[in-house]
Amino acid sequence: MMEKTNFNIKPNMTQKIYQVDAFTDQIFKGNPAAVCPLEKWLSDELMQNIAMENNLSETVFFVKEGEQYHIRWFTPQVEVDLCGHATLAAAYVLFHHEKHEESRIDFYSHKSGKLTVTKERNLLSLNFPADKLNPVDLNNEYTDCFDIKPIAAYRGKSDLMLLFSSENEIQKLVPDFIKLAKIEARGIIVTARGKAVDFVSRFFGPQVGVNEDPVTGSAHTLLIPYWAKELNKTELSAMQLSQRTGSLQCKFLGERVEISGRGKLYMAGELFLS
Image (cartoon, rainbow, N blue to C red; front, top):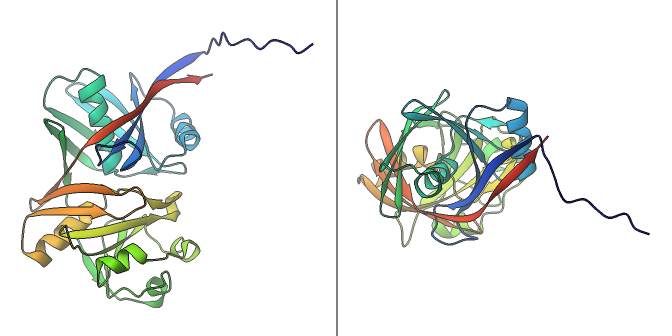
């Protein structure tokens, strides 16, 4: 006779968790992020294990301290300095499910400083520090990573950005992830001028455990300053051409950038932590 399973689970601790698709208003589009609102910090090891178990490009944790929320982001492998889509997902949860009543949220990261998110109807706008571009030589280490050759290369604080000739090239590009993983960068951004939007991009991050990220808000801290100068405009539209795709509205504010998009709740539940 088969032993009856006892489903009356009594964990030592439960933890709320949400999953939000960011930079889209449809589920199964945009970039999914897991969001864990905390009353106090968990250990670094436990947060990394939760992110590994979730197996999404980012899991975000935040704790309210005074009038602001301290925030941290984890890929399945490492903690990162900044993540745009997970910050948007965290703000979506606070506005819609965690009773934040004001139209502005002040986040703070010990790695990236002050980050604000404002809400206007269903549009959420991230205010992030702008990255600084430095042109670099277009060497074989970069060009051998793709089946199509880029035409220019730039370095930011954490990422490498490669410029291509057209949107079609970005869409058709086939990356070599083994070679990409050897480049010293958090990730590699590929970009070109768009057809229906001002610019398009894709983002590859095998170094941090994410071969291709669906929509990368933080990459736009580098993309926006470049395309604002290139197109001589401060308000831009953007599309990330991953399989899921994502839409972003962008503003160049000099030392900072504004990255706007929508969110869609996919799941809410509890983690059972022993």
